[in-house]
Length: 270
Image (tube, rainbow, N blue to C red; front, top):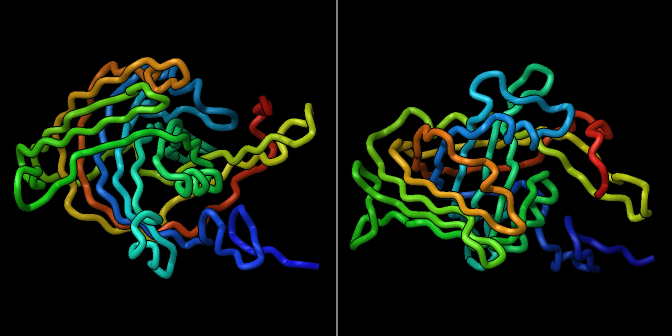
């Protein structure tokens, strides 16, 4: 019998074609975060059982743009940048499970296939999108990381613009916001190959950074707009009240999560 290898599909005799390597996965990134409040009912409708809304500020949302360089433990992808560099934009809310507060990504768009594959493994609902954000630089016209610096960011998918923002930094901050500040509570779902058999995979998992480091966070103000689109629902998280905006450079290592419970979500396969 022949053996096939690889952490993810496609599995081959050598494993070299696997879309993603085995963890740990390492990330360096620039994060632009805009927090605001929406109708708490719109957050609640995105939380399947057994998750409940956060007790405090249940309508708080973080919309985050991230410009990443990522790699496996060897770091080899950094020298072949097409395998390391990607961008994403994602919406995060907070929820509770058995009395503990979690963050949860409810919408996310990325621009590389390997990032989608990692999301499938981690429970992120990733889709393809077009994501851009202003990069800081110490020379020329690009903004420095300083008071008054302005950063723009855009998100589009399926030929439609979904969101855009302009963030103006004001001062250093002790935090990078509060919505995305907890371990993630995600579901891993996969429909059965047999019609009518429900979900073959139905897991609620906890996930977070195995290690984290970050530069000085900056807080500021944001002009944020969301747009309707035929096949996207980000705009349902309508902006009712701005909270704040943040910029921070971070380094993260992800090395697996843990199962909270299985087969309990009651979510249909269709």
